[in-house]
Amino acid sequence: MPHRDSRTPLYGIAVAAQLVDLPEATLRLFESKGLLTPARSDGGTRRYSDDDIDRLRRAARLREDGVNIAGIARVLELQDANDHLQVQNDGLRDALDGRRGTDATVAD
Figure 1: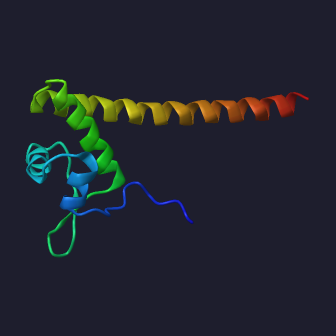
Figure 2 (figure 1 turned 90 degrees about the horizontal axis):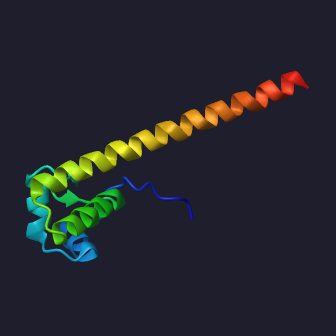
């Protein structure tokens, strides 16, 4: 079975709400406050990806911890920035390791 892209919109709002154990109204609230932007079908139906589901779970945990919507938005933004920096860091580390391997080969 091929690996599925976690960004592929798969789930309608009812399924997404069930997966994260939140009311559909909460998903709509999170969307209206800019915490996530699910894809839309041609007919305008919300479609949530696995990445959206993960983001909803993170937002729900923060809400359970008493963080307000503005705080949730900021924490999610910082987490996303951190993830992006980690990917960049890993890429730089891989490139550096590749250069070291090339330098070692040339030196031999």
